[in-house]
Image 1: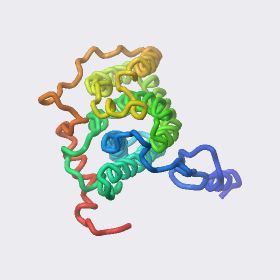
Image 2: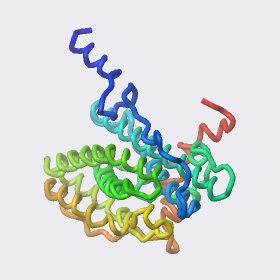
Image 3: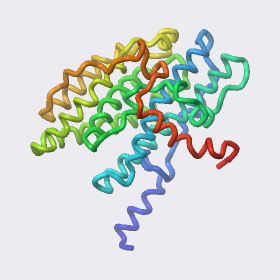
Length: 299
Protein backbone atom coordinates (compact mmCIF):
# COMPACT_ATOMS: atom_id res chain seq x y z
CA UNK A 1 0.00 0.00 0.00
CA UNK A 2 1.43 3.38 -0.99
CA UNK A 3 1.62 6.30 1.44
CA UNK A 4 -1.23 8.05 -0.39
CA UNK A 5 -3.43 4.96 -0.25
CA UNK A 6 -2.69 4.50 3.45
CA UNK A 7 -3.55 8.14 4.16
CA UNK A 8 -6.96 7.70 2.54
CA UNK A 9 -7.61 4.49 4.47
CA UNK A 10 -6.49 6.05 7.77
CA UNK A 11 -8.71 9.08 7.25
CA UNK A 12 -11.83 6.91 7.42
CA UNK A 13 -11.23 6.38 11.12
CA UNK A 14 -10.44 9.98 12.05
CA UNK A 15 -12.70 12.55 13.64
CA UNK A 16 -14.34 14.58 10.90
CA UNK A 17 -17.13 17.08 10.36
CA UNK A 18 -18.14 15.08 7.28
CA UNK A 19 -20.60 12.46 8.54
CA UNK A 20 -21.51 10.99 5.18
CA UNK A 21 -19.31 7.94 5.73
CA UNK A 22 -21.24 4.79 6.45
CA UNK A 23 -18.74 3.69 9.08
CA UNK A 24 -16.02 5.30 11.18
CA UNK A 25 -15.79 7.68 14.10
CA UNK A 26 -16.74 11.29 14.48
CA UNK A 27 -20.48 10.65 14.77
CA UNK A 28 -22.47 12.62 17.33
CA UNK A 29 -25.82 11.84 18.92
CA UNK A 30 -28.24 14.58 17.79
CA UNK A 31 -30.52 13.79 20.75
CA UNK A 32 -27.83 14.00 23.44
CA UNK A 33 -29.13 16.13 26.32
CA UNK A 34 -32.61 16.53 24.78
CA UNK A 35 -35.60 15.90 27.06
CA UNK A 36 -37.59 13.05 25.43
CA UNK A 37 -40.85 13.79 27.25
CA UNK A 38 -43.72 15.18 25.19
CA UNK A 39 -43.94 18.94 25.89
CA UNK A 40 -46.98 20.16 27.85
CA UNK A 41 -49.89 21.13 25.65
CA UNK A 42 -48.75 18.99 22.70
CA UNK A 43 -51.19 16.36 21.45
CA UNK A 44 -49.13 13.20 22.01
CA UNK A 45 -51.28 11.04 19.71
CA UNK A 46 -50.96 13.56 16.89
CA UNK A 47 -47.20 13.84 17.49
CA UNK A 48 -46.91 10.06 17.25
CA UNK A 49 -48.85 10.04 13.97
CA UNK A 50 -46.80 12.91 12.54
CA UNK A 51 -43.42 11.35 13.36
CA UNK A 52 -44.68 8.05 11.98
CA UNK A 53 -45.51 9.69 8.65
CA UNK A 54 -42.12 11.33 8.33
CA UNK A 55 -40.37 8.18 9.49
CA UNK A 56 -42.25 6.11 6.91
CA UNK A 57 -41.21 8.53 4.14
CA UNK A 58 -37.55 8.05 5.04
CA UNK A 59 -37.76 4.29 5.65
CA UNK A 60 -39.49 3.48 2.37
CA UNK A 61 -37.34 5.82 0.29
CA UNK A 62 -34.19 4.39 1.88
CA UNK A 63 -35.25 0.89 0.88
CA UNK A 64 -35.93 1.96 -2.69
CA UNK A 65 -32.39 3.36 -2.92
CA UNK A 66 -30.93 0.21 -1.40
CA UNK A 67 -32.53 -1.78 -4.22
CA UNK A 68 -30.26 0.09 -6.66
CA UNK A 69 -27.05 -1.17 -5.08
CA UNK A 70 -24.90 -3.07 -7.66
CA UNK A 71 -27.03 -1.64 -10.48
CA UNK A 72 -25.62 1.88 -10.73
CA UNK A 73 -23.40 3.03 -13.62
CA UNK A 74 -20.23 3.70 -11.58
CA UNK A 75 -18.74 2.71 -8.23
CA UNK A 76 -18.73 6.36 -7.17
CA UNK A 77 -22.51 6.49 -7.58
CA UNK A 78 -22.87 3.25 -5.62
CA UNK A 79 -21.05 4.91 -2.72
CA UNK A 80 -23.02 8.16 -2.95
CA UNK A 81 -26.44 6.49 -3.13
CA UNK A 82 -25.55 4.00 -0.38
CA UNK A 83 -24.70 6.88 1.93
CA UNK A 84 -27.89 8.74 1.05
CA UNK A 85 -29.87 5.56 1.78
CA UNK A 86 -28.08 5.23 5.14
CA UNK A 87 -28.82 8.88 5.99
CA UNK A 88 -32.52 8.29 5.35
CA UNK A 89 -32.46 5.06 7.32
CA UNK A 90 -30.96 6.93 10.26
CA UNK A 91 -33.68 9.57 10.01
CA UNK A 92 -36.30 6.84 9.87
CA UNK A 93 -34.95 5.16 13.00
CA UNK A 94 -35.02 8.38 15.03
CA UNK A 95 -38.48 9.37 13.83
CA UNK A 96 -40.00 5.93 14.40
CA UNK A 97 -38.44 5.84 17.87
CA UNK A 98 -39.97 9.25 18.60
CA UNK A 99 -43.32 8.03 17.29
CA UNK A 100 -43.15 5.12 19.74
CA UNK A 101 -42.30 7.44 22.64
CA UNK A 102 -45.21 9.74 21.84
CA UNK A 103 -47.50 6.74 21.34
CA UNK A 104 -46.62 5.56 24.83
CA UNK A 105 -47.23 9.02 26.28
CA UNK A 106 -50.64 9.16 24.59
CA UNK A 107 -51.71 5.75 25.89
CA UNK A 108 -50.12 5.99 29.31
CA UNK A 109 -48.17 2.83 28.57
CA UNK A 110 -45.24 1.74 26.44
CA UNK A 111 -45.26 2.59 22.77
CA UNK A 112 -44.03 0.33 20.01
CA UNK A 113 -40.32 0.24 19.23
CA UNK A 114 -38.77 1.18 15.90
CA UNK A 115 -38.44 -2.47 14.78
CA UNK A 116 -42.09 -3.16 15.55
CA UNK A 117 -43.15 -0.13 13.56
CA UNK A 118 -40.88 -0.90 10.61
CA UNK A 119 -41.39 -4.65 10.29
CA UNK A 120 -44.73 -5.58 11.82
CA UNK A 121 -47.24 -3.16 10.35
CA UNK A 122 -49.37 -4.01 7.33
CA UNK A 123 -49.52 -2.02 4.11
CA UNK A 124 -52.55 0.11 5.07
CA UNK A 125 -50.83 1.15 8.31
CA UNK A 126 -47.95 2.91 6.52
CA UNK A 127 -48.36 6.66 6.04
CA UNK A 128 -45.59 7.55 3.58
CA UNK A 129 -46.25 9.72 0.54
CA UNK A 130 -46.50 7.77 -2.69
CA UNK A 131 -43.46 9.56 -4.14
CA UNK A 132 -41.29 7.64 -1.65
CA UNK A 133 -42.44 4.23 -2.88
CA UNK A 134 -42.21 4.85 -6.63
CA UNK A 135 -40.24 2.20 -8.54
CA UNK A 136 -37.69 4.01 -10.71
CA UNK A 137 -37.37 2.67 -14.26
CA UNK A 138 -33.88 4.08 -14.85
CA UNK A 139 -31.16 6.34 -13.47
CA UNK A 140 -32.90 9.46 -14.80
CA UNK A 141 -36.01 8.67 -12.77
CA UNK A 142 -33.87 7.92 -9.73
CA UNK A 143 -32.13 11.30 -9.82
CA UNK A 144 -35.25 13.26 -10.76
CA UNK A 145 -37.28 11.71 -7.95
CA UNK A 146 -34.45 12.26 -5.48
CA UNK A 147 -34.31 15.93 -6.46
CA UNK A 148 -38.03 16.46 -5.85
CA UNK A 149 -38.08 14.46 -2.62
CA UNK A 150 -34.95 16.01 -1.09
CA UNK A 151 -35.92 19.57 -2.05
CA UNK A 152 -39.29 19.06 -0.34
CA UNK A 153 -37.92 17.30 2.72
CA UNK A 154 -35.14 19.86 3.18
CA UNK A 155 -37.72 22.68 3.14
CA UNK A 156 -39.80 20.72 5.66
CA UNK A 157 -36.89 20.02 8.01
CA UNK A 158 -35.80 23.63 7.81
CA UNK A 159 -39.11 24.58 9.42
CA UNK A 160 -39.21 21.65 11.84
CA UNK A 161 -35.81 22.66 13.24
CA UNK A 162 -37.79 25.31 15.16
CA UNK A 163 -40.46 22.83 16.31
CA UNK A 164 -41.88 23.15 19.82
CA UNK A 165 -41.04 19.47 20.28
CA UNK A 166 -37.30 19.53 21.08
CA UNK A 167 -36.78 15.94 19.92
CA UNK A 168 -38.37 16.56 16.54
CA UNK A 169 -36.42 19.83 16.25
CA UNK A 170 -33.10 18.04 16.91
CA UNK A 171 -33.89 15.30 14.39
CA UNK A 172 -34.88 17.90 11.78
CA UNK A 173 -31.73 19.96 12.31
CA UNK A 174 -29.50 16.93 11.76
CA UNK A 175 -31.58 15.74 8.81
CA UNK A 176 -31.39 19.15 7.11
CA UNK A 177 -27.59 18.94 6.91
CA UNK A 178 -27.85 15.53 5.25
CA UNK A 179 -30.66 16.54 2.91
CA UNK A 180 -28.72 19.53 1.63
CA UNK A 181 -26.17 17.06 0.26
CA UNK A 182 -28.91 14.79 -1.14
CA UNK A 183 -30.53 17.69 -2.97
CA UNK A 184 -27.26 18.98 -4.40
CA UNK A 185 -26.19 15.52 -5.53
CA UNK A 186 -29.49 14.98 -7.35
CA UNK A 187 -29.46 18.49 -8.85
CA UNK A 188 -26.00 17.97 -10.33
CA UNK A 189 -27.14 14.78 -12.07
CA UNK A 190 -30.39 16.29 -13.34
CA UNK A 191 -28.42 19.18 -14.85
CA UNK A 192 -25.78 16.84 -16.27
CA UNK A 193 -28.38 14.64 -17.94
CA UNK A 194 -30.76 17.41 -18.99
CA UNK A 195 -28.06 19.60 -20.51
CA UNK A 196 -26.08 16.67 -21.91
CA UNK A 197 -26.61 14.71 -25.09
CA UNK A 198 -29.92 14.69 -26.97
CA UNK A 199 -30.52 11.16 -25.66
CA UNK A 200 -29.83 12.03 -22.01
CA UNK A 201 -32.01 15.15 -22.37
CA UNK A 202 -34.94 13.09 -23.67
CA UNK A 203 -34.55 10.52 -20.91
CA UNK A 204 -34.39 13.17 -18.18
CA UNK A 205 -37.45 15.00 -19.54
CA UNK A 206 -39.35 11.71 -19.80
CA UNK A 207 -38.38 10.86 -16.21
CA UNK A 208 -39.78 14.15 -14.93
CA UNK A 209 -43.05 13.55 -16.76
CA UNK A 210 -43.40 10.26 -14.83
CA UNK A 211 -42.40 11.69 -11.45
CA UNK A 212 -44.27 15.00 -11.52
CA UNK A 213 -47.79 13.65 -10.82
CA UNK A 214 -46.48 12.24 -7.53
CA UNK A 215 -45.31 15.66 -6.30
CA UNK A 216 -48.75 17.17 -5.78
CA UNK A 217 -49.38 15.04 -2.71
CA UNK A 218 -46.44 16.65 -0.91
CA UNK A 219 -48.29 19.92 -0.47
CA UNK A 220 -51.80 18.69 0.38
CA UNK A 221 -53.44 19.89 3.64
CA UNK A 222 -52.66 17.51 6.47
CA UNK A 223 -55.17 17.10 9.34
CA UNK A 224 -52.46 15.62 11.58
CA UNK A 225 -50.17 18.64 11.13
CA UNK A 226 -53.16 20.91 11.77
CA UNK A 227 -53.47 19.40 15.26
CA UNK A 228 -49.87 20.35 16.05
CA UNK A 229 -49.54 24.15 15.84
CA UNK A 230 -45.98 25.20 16.57
CA UNK A 231 -44.80 21.59 16.31
CA UNK A 232 -45.50 20.53 12.72
CA UNK A 233 -45.29 22.42 9.42
CA UNK A 234 -48.14 23.22 7.06
CA UNK A 235 -47.36 21.36 3.80
CA UNK A 236 -48.83 24.18 1.71
CA UNK A 237 -46.23 26.59 3.12
CA UNK A 238 -43.42 24.55 1.51
CA UNK A 239 -44.53 24.88 -2.10
CA UNK A 240 -43.00 28.28 -2.88
CA UNK A 241 -39.55 27.28 -1.62
CA UNK A 242 -39.60 23.91 -3.36
CA UNK A 243 -40.89 25.38 -6.63
CA UNK A 244 -38.07 27.93 -6.53
CA UNK A 245 -35.41 25.25 -6.15
CA UNK A 246 -36.88 23.02 -8.84
CA UNK A 247 -37.32 25.96 -11.21
CA UNK A 248 -33.66 26.92 -10.84
CA UNK A 249 -32.45 23.38 -11.48
CA UNK A 250 -34.74 22.79 -14.47
CA UNK A 251 -33.64 26.06 -16.07
CA UNK A 252 -29.96 25.10 -15.70
CA UNK A 253 -30.76 21.65 -17.10
CA UNK A 254 -32.67 23.11 -20.11
CA UNK A 255 -35.69 21.01 -19.08
CA UNK A 256 -39.36 21.95 -19.24
CA UNK A 257 -41.48 21.89 -16.13
CA UNK A 258 -44.06 19.11 -16.67
CA UNK A 259 -47.73 20.06 -16.82
CA UNK A 260 -48.98 16.66 -15.66
CA UNK A 261 -51.93 16.62 -13.27
CA UNK A 262 -51.40 15.19 -9.75
CA UNK A 263 -51.83 11.46 -9.33
CA UNK A 264 -55.46 10.71 -8.55
CA UNK A 265 -56.49 9.84 -5.03
CA UNK A 266 -58.47 6.67 -4.32
CA UNK A 267 -61.86 7.50 -2.78
CA UNK A 268 -60.29 10.76 -1.67
CA UNK A 269 -57.34 9.02 0.01
CA UNK A 270 -53.61 8.76 -0.72
CA UNK A 271 -50.36 7.72 0.96
CA UNK A 272 -50.89 9.67 4.16
CA UNK A 273 -54.19 7.78 4.56
CA UNK A 274 -52.59 4.36 4.02
CA UNK A 275 -53.59 4.05 0.35
CA UNK A 276 -50.58 3.19 -1.80
CA UNK A 277 -49.55 2.23 -5.32
CA UNK A 278 -49.41 -1.37 -6.50
CA UNK A 279 -45.61 -1.35 -6.25
CA UNK A 280 -45.71 -0.73 -2.51
CA UNK A 281 -46.88 -4.21 -1.54
CA UNK A 282 -43.89 -5.83 -3.23
CA UNK A 283 -41.49 -3.36 -1.58
CA UNK A 284 -42.93 -3.99 1.86
CA UNK A 285 -42.81 -7.77 1.46
CA UNK A 286 -39.10 -7.57 0.69
CA UNK A 287 -38.40 -5.06 3.48
CA UNK A 288 -40.15 -7.14 6.14
CA UNK A 289 -39.37 -10.67 4.94
CA UNK A 290 -36.52 -11.54 7.32
CA UNK A 291 -38.12 -10.02 10.42
CA UNK A 292 -41.43 -11.75 9.75
CA UNK A 293 -39.76 -15.09 9.05
CA UNK A 294 -37.81 -14.84 12.34
CA UNK A 295 -39.96 -12.63 14.61
CA UNK A 296 -38.14 -13.63 17.80
CA UNK A 297 -34.62 -13.16 16.43
CA UNK A 298 -32.26 -10.55 17.79
CA UNK A 299 -29.20 -9.07 16.08
